[in-house]
Image 1 (cartoon, rainbow, N blue to C red):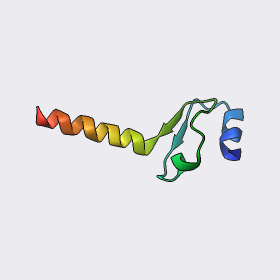
Image 2: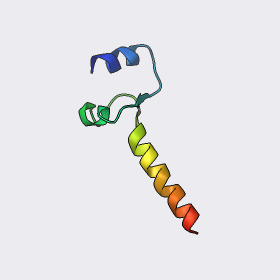
Image 3: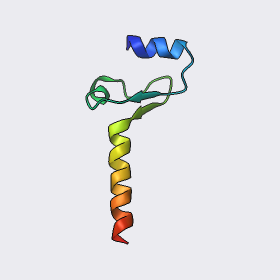
Length: 54
């Protein structure tokens, strides 16, 4: 992942995968935290759905 490696050299704290297809090709484990925006959105939708059910 050339671009991600360049970001690491710039001392980024994390990488956000903002497109739906990026998690399919990005390594699961990486030297910095990787945030999968689609996974995060799905988790939040489930949390909010069940909050409304209470």
